Picture: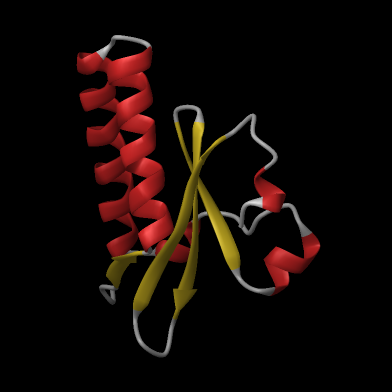
Amino acid sequence: MDNYSVMMSAAAAEDIGNIADYIANTLLEPETAAKLIGRLKTAVKSLETMPERHPLVADTYLALCGIRTLLVDNYCVFYAVNRAEHTVNIIRVIYTKRAWEKLI
């Protein structure tokens, strides 16, 4: 089984920071924020092996671009797999109820 390198875009890193900040400081739930970030990191790390096990997004254009989605609690991790370079590029991490089609 081939291992892939997982790369995080600046936008995805900012998304995760904003999620943590909102839960910890706006909702005043720092423990919940820490646990969610831990689950997100674990899920993203799991993409090092068999990253294509998750489905392509429901949007036709984005699916043709190879964008896949990984659901973690109420958040979607959007990513693309580059087989030739053995890399997984994390594009965005977005709350599921947002209009994500306009953010990717």
